[in-house]
Image 1 (tube, rainbow, N blue to C red):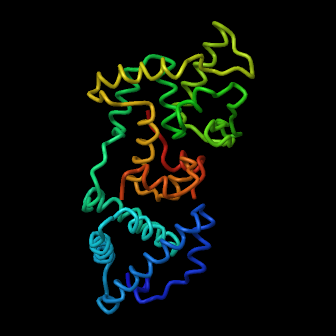
Image 2 (cartoon, rainbow, N blue to C red):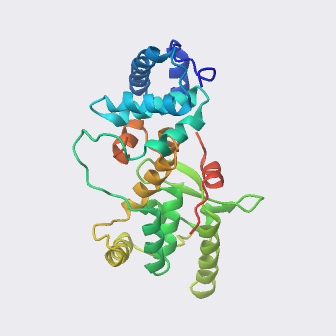
Amino acid sequence: MGDEISLAEMLDEVDFRNYLERNGLSENTQKEYANKIKQFLKYMDKFKNDNLNEDDFLQKIFEFINMKKRTWGIRFAILSYLRYKEHGNLAVKFNEKYRGKFKMKSRKLERKSISFGKMKELCSILPMPHKLITMIQYDTACRINDVLNIKLRNIEADADGMVKIKIKEQKTDNLRTIYISSDTAYLLAKYIEHIKKTIGLKIDEKIFKISYILHSYHIKQAGKKIGEEKITSHWIRTSRAIHLLNKGYDIITIKNLLNHSSIKTTEIYLREAGLDSRKLIEEEPVKW
């Protein structure tokens, strides 16, 4: 472990901040993360002669983070630093080993997510097309209105068959291309085929003739059946983000998927602690 990471090293702040900038972090966040890493390296310098193995090293990171009044900011900074130093495997292992073990010193926040098991249960209850809408929203982590506005011309497939959707965000007016899982793509193809045969569907028409209010009603009714009375469609978006965080994906990946303008928004959004969307689906396939 000592050969892999020099615990006594000095931070190359310019290079580290350039790395953060390339990954979409604001100037203020770059500065904040650099300061946090300086504190971290100073703390780790105490153990430079201890020949720490990998588990000991991760334990020291955990102890350092838990010394802070608020743990999530320093946690994200260190995980970003590990990836910057090309030790992404350690970032993943750290998340897996210490998930849920941090002291929660900030105010308690109301849960706004469900497990993936509950997500599958929810979709099994929802009627079509609300099931499909929910699966697309989960895969893409988009806002529900953006999913409801998808038009037939927005759906494309790569040469290898992977399906992508061009989604225009109402909030930012940005046009994004996001891949969906094979299970969702199969159900989407079946649904489009059915709509074409029954009522017809032109290339520039929305594929879902569903209002936000109607979809929200079905989400609420299905939520009650699985013991989640407070659920809203926005929980689908937050659940996807938190599931990825728990699987070891870093906050930069999640920020890019959610398309937040500031990583601060993502930190608040997750209430916790770049891959592109195609790689995300390939490396973390959703199995409905």
